[in-house]
Length: 527
Image (tube, rainbow, N blue to C red; front, side):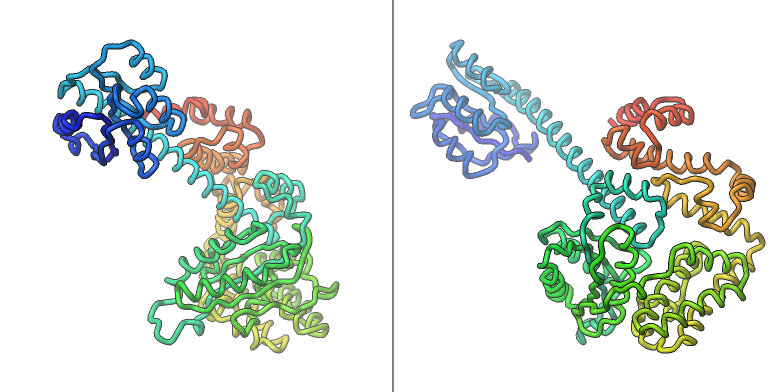
């Protein structure tokens, strides 16, 4: 309903206008009257009004003065002028101040109704355009947030090896300045024992509001910390803060109080050690996860020192261990995980637990790619107290072997192991289409010879590797064309195409029309 104010110095005229039309039926509500322009300006200051119907010849502030005054302060207000004076100065004033219509007294019911319907149609269109603009802004904003979190998750898990890819994507997502900062990663999560005694709500149902509160606290905190979430761990959320901002402990404290106040649960927090540079974020992530697992108080800062001997295993060594498991070389695999555990155990407890965590994360990733669901006792994030039980090399070793055996059984029980791994490669492509994927890179990740991988991929999927990648990217591009107003350059960049021109040529070859024409066609179909 649009709000209408009637302005006229004659009460009977105001009353007559009220009775001439069915305001509610037309979509309007009369919010008041004013006897002159001065009263009208006062009403405009006090409440929201969409349309003013005004006379021109009035005392104190006449219609001309009112039109000039309102147009400066309320440029989007719609004004309909009604007057009994056929004087050009009134018409000129109305036009100059963009009045919607100029009607002569006595105004007929049909004239007023037609004018109001036109104004309403204009307001409806403007409101719809505004709502659509806000929806587009929200969609783009949410999409960028999703892309940013996806990129951060890849950084902390070490999924992106090529340095130039990291730099380019970080710049696109306005994260490149973080590479130069010293940062800490804070992991915050919920545990069963933190539920209050009188609470009968399942913990998993509290996860969405818990994450929302964490995000809101981080948004309001100075320094613009980054927040990311891994859907594999529904009870955890992670916050990246700048070490230069010494007030980050206040964020942890405020977050804890807000969660307790709003959902009645005490979160646990683990704070990783300070790190600098994207290459170190993986170490910082594991450190924060470890600090959270070992935290016994509701808020607990990790005090583990980061020294040379406590670094994680090199990525190349982890890839070799993965390859041994996937290829069924269990003897080599077992030796490859026992040896670093024994070495770490001899150095320090924290070194031992960090290496154990790294190996666990590797197995968890392989389980996910093989579509294996880990049981509750195999998920450290549900039962973090398990970490404290791994106080010998053999206990940690046997725990990892059980998960590895489950993965190996799944692969060996497949009628076609190549098919299983190709499906895992497809899943990886669908999750990472926005990056610069190459056949050599994917083959290396899944421990294949590039030529052999190319052959089996085409045989199993029915198209070449590059065709499949382009199809996945094009599907995402179509969603962006249909759901956002992003430029073709942005869509190409976010979909993984090297340039807007290359994207346009591939799109026209696949769909027969240009991306711009496709977007126009969709817009016309939706009108």
